[in-house]
Each structure stands twice: as C-alpha cells, then as structure tokens.
Image (cartoon, rainbow, N blue to C red):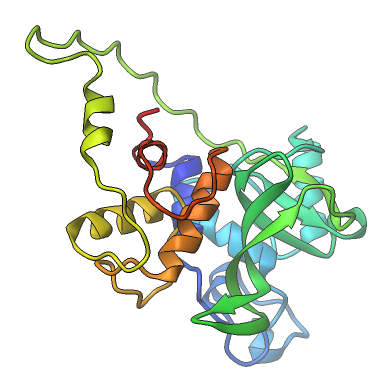
Length: 253
C-alpha cells in the first residue's frame, strides 16, 4: 500500500547500493538521459533521481517531484505550498544555497537531529567508508547550516481504521501489553528466532540492517539500528530490546 511507510521501506531496501563508473545508476537509467553527461547521458548526480525512483517504486508516484535537479524539486514543493522549515518523517531535506546542493529522505526525527537515507552520498558499509557513491543512512543535526528546508510529499492518506471490536470476555483488554512482556530482552551476541523477528521488524520500520548480515545473529549492526529506532521513539538508546523497544517495533504503544 502506498504511503510514508512504503516510501521509507523502499529507500531502506536500497541501502548499500553503489554507483558504477561516474554516477551510473539504475535510478538515472529509469529517469532518463541528460545530454552532456558520461555513460551516454546517464552519468549525472543522482540524489534527486533516487528519491523520484523511490516515490514511483513505492506506489507514491505524483506525490513529489520527478526530477534529477534539487532546485527543480524545491520549486515543485514551493509551487504546491509543501515546503517547510521544520521536519517530519517522509520529508525531503534539501541542502545548500537554495536547496540546490543535495537532497535526502527524512526517516526519523528527534529533538536534536534527523535520520536520513540518501543516494549519491557518503557513508559506511560493512565497516568501510565510501565517499559520495552510494545509498546510505546518516544522522544530521537539525540546526546544521547546510539544511535549506523540507519538501513534504503529498502521500496518500491511510484509510480510516474501523472501530475495533471489543475483546471477548475471556481476552484481557491489555493483551498487547501482555504480549510485549513475554518477549525477551535481546542484546548483542544473542541468536535465534526472536532475533530474526527483531531483524525484520527493524526493516519494516525503516531501519534495515545491512545486506548480508545473518538475520538470526544479533550483531553490532542490529545494536546500531535499535539505537536509531530508540532515538526516534524518544527512548533510552540501550541497543537492546527493552519492553518499550518491542512496543516501538510492533507499534503497539
């Protein structure tokens, strides 16, 4: 189903993707060639084409700009009166003068920082650092002078949820709390099916662990992802599955 969650999951699934040659990516080849660039016109900067591709691939085509240019993207949001100075999850954050330098997707917001996923940017993968050549997750201070502003795609609104049926007399009303209390406290080094459950819940919340990581082994990558989740949810960043962390993963509290 299209919407913010689908957009974030689509972007997170591309973390670790890297360009070949000079800016040669599947995102540019989807968007189209621009004369004068390498690779027969497909080798242009691709931070904006990456987000346009994600909108389309997540079922949100038309909710935001389809463009290779950051300044064009800013103009689209301003023309639609959807450009703001404060962030929300799902926003496009634009950097540099006039927003023309770079753009990334906001996937979590805290009081002090935003967590983003961006293409044609720098980041770490499997303990190695790469400069400006791939899709990576990063944390940026909200007061960074690099930030120009935030474009807010017009994501489809979720259908209203029906009024839940009253629980049966034998079923406690606080059944979600009971489930959370039965889930174990997991930490780095643990393994098993509960780790696998945590692994895929992290991915569903936009905190996809790096490709190739064993989904039944609690690694340092899982610890980092949990800390990002906890930061976004306003929880202590323990890097373990406390009851409140399970609740955030399951979205039951």
